[in-house]
Image 1 (cartoon, rainbow over the protein chains, first blue to last red):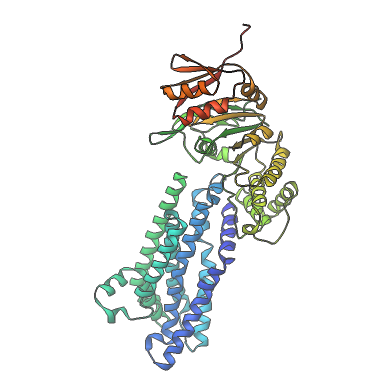
Image 2: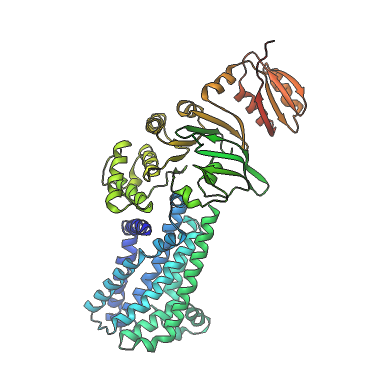
Length: 242
Length: 294
């Protein structure tokens, strides 16, 4: 299939970029170690490896927004996409080949975080259910990245991507309990998918079932559908504008 | 033999600005045809239209008999290869990987894409190194960019400013590789280097403000440049200052209906056009008068 050729290239392009490795794989592990060390001196339930691992995974997914947007924006800027537009690839081939290659990396990051969490003393149950939650959030993040990459320049995606990572960090409930903060902060946090993903993943990893997390799953599925649709529209608009 | 590329009244506007205005060209199969002009003359817009990247706003065109405006663009994409103005390569891939990628997006299986990549690396003398292409020199990147356009063995190759930004040595080297393709492929090349169009082209067209203002073989155009045939230029208005400047430069200028007839012992068409453009004259036509027995 023609799209596999481009998907293979995109996977190589991401995995060969040292920044992807540092931010995507190493940074979450560093955070896991850092906050677990803090937890040893100042015990906080939020920073126990059990609670911290799913939070760090969601935080790590925030970087994928930047990876996806930067890859696409760079390909637009370098005219690499213009070259591809003159080949027999169809619009669906482009969209899929810019989304699919990120999943092996998301999966790798998730597995590495789980292993690190287990080594630090966490015990996880229902990993499959957690994976469903994470993959829905992953699709949202990648699609959001494709959407930004189709709209903004390389310089702009760098700024917008950094902003979104900060948003994920603050409003996902990874480092603080949003319900304790309350007010607008809590409302905005729960209007976005990240906090729902953290809560649902924590619950299923402690033994809850996927059906217990059904409202979060619906929310995450809705976000994934909307962001993917918007990404497809933005990409097709970019193709027409070339 | 039918034309490889044929356009009739092909035009493209962006808002009020006409980027390409009433283009009529016929490029024969196996021919290297150059579009020569300054930045903004409309060369890249023509390539983008012929590569199905941009819809014309008026006119019609065929590419190897396939209708550009009303036909299936996939048929055109199957017979063309494009090397854009930017090198447009994947920086984190090696030379061979870039070529294999292009083979695979054109539908070759992995094995066939490998074989094709090897052939092209031999043809373009590209080294099979494990180095990422972002680290290659400008000349090597350009050669790779051209090779990537050839992966699908296209009948028509579009080379948009293939030597832009290269030093004279690297430019000549790229010319050699383009020369190797002559006759085998139909090539439409854009350039703003006069010597490049002169060295490579079978036919060329000089563009200004979206219009072809002169066309022919390099030899024909050279004869026009050095001949003493009067040049007729037409425009809506000609400021008096430009007539004064032309006279001062030694040209004999005669006013005609909507234009000027300019003659000299040695006619330099480029100098005249430059002078007119510097005075913001928007040319609607330019032609050299046939010599008479008188």
